[in-house]
Length: 86
Picture 1 (cartoon, rainbow, N blue to C red):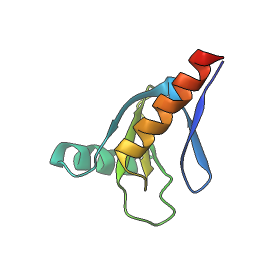
Picture 2 (spheres, rainbow, N blue to C red):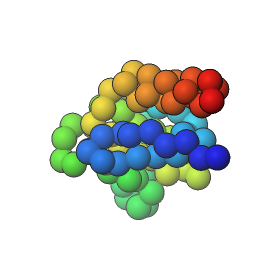
Picture 3 (spheres, rainbow, N blue to C red):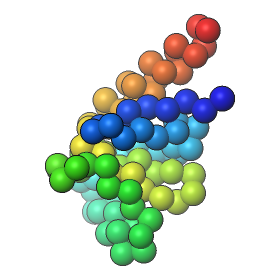
């Protein structure tokens, strides 16, 4: 069964498809984001706010979020723990 987490402003992603949640501050990640924007594989879920986290998905798409990577990781972990208890 798919698990979803909120990544800000009413946007949700499937946790089973996330490979990594990274900060957008490093040069390699900035290049990845720019390339994804140019090729149309970036999903901007920031609603015009500053990008604070980049989610790398299984299919190569990048999801840009205005939430901190720690916040997203904590939500994913909490969701995983809730499902383990059920």
